[in-house]
Image 1 (cartoon, rainbow, N blue to C red):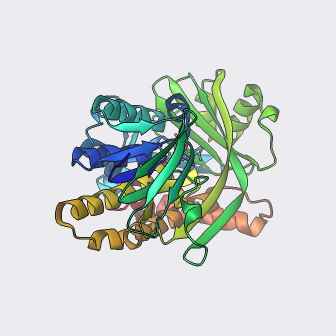
Image 2: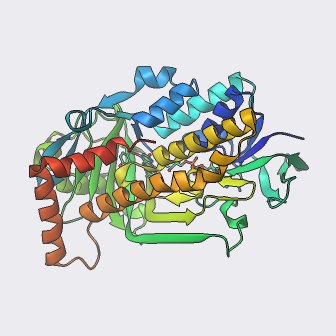
Image 3: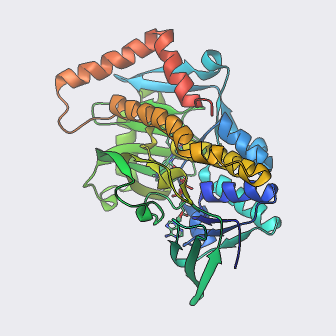
Length: 389
Ligand code: RFL
Ligand code: PHB
């Protein structure tokens, strides 16, 4: 087989890049190791920046999102059992949209299938070869048969645990990492959300987040110990702990019900530099991970797609490689800003194991300052709605 671009990984970034390239007649093939059902079923991001929405519109996959997404003009923060609102709209003239990653991925799959794009699901043992040459190719196993695709470029959209980043020689790549000493236990429940806007809570027992997917589907998270086992958290225990951590007016209102999904995710900041090597380009979680506290992971993956799609378009239209050569530098500049913001949200809202009363006072005064300073609120709002591409 032959194509222009092989995309390894059919998560949101790989699918979006594929759809956009196809819309400009740039042939591409997506190789995804999991089944479509598995990819669509992964409950992850919920908050989309306006820039992400624009990219989904450009790809022609926003019909359902435009109808069913919920625009949020503000967000609540709480500390010392007391909540206050950041008016995103007033401060930035922008908002965010609540629309699940599961739905984004489903919309992309539907659109690619409709336009006869090529996705190999259940592609096993995907390996890029000869990246350092003019004739790169990718091999994989599909239904037990060995396949080979020759291409111009390979794009690694295969997430943090993927193989793409690992083929970059050690002497070329530098990685930066912070692993946080806690995780997030998240549940999905078919109950009305406790609040019309998200609530991020700093509490002595640890962080909590009240989020949602729609009018009858709530998403809640609490900070848990890294060693904690999901088996230790039955629904009753989860709701009791969540109520303790949310401001009491919200806790009194909350409607509880059985969880329909429950999982624990570790928290990590990770950046690899550069984001490309020879004919290989990394996009999204394959190159960087942020803790979910700032709601930035999927949005960053989409801004990477923005830079790479435009650079590839320019190359195939005019033969000019300048933008491709600048891809890593451009993407990383935005990545580091979102990494900083996500780190700041995480350190401001979570309890650290060694946290002293001094540290607690610092967190409290950070949030008190935020509550009373428009300048400080503007910094948060600007970052939360997403910095320009
Ligand atoms: P993905 O989604 O990990 O997709 C990678 C795909 O590559 C496949 N793959 C391979 N395919 C072929 N061969 C191989 N060797 C392969 N290895 C892996 C995988 O099966 C998979 O399908 O990466 P992508 O596309 O870069 O997208 C990144 C986002 O998924 C991620 O950043 C977000 O989910 C992060 N995130 C959030 N982001 C936001 O913008 N807003 C949020 O509100 C938000 N909330 C969250 C989140 C992530 C969370 N977890 C579970 C980590 C909340 C949580 C709890
Ligand atoms: C979610 O709804 O899953 C969600 C929302 C905001 C975050 C992280 C996750 O910061």
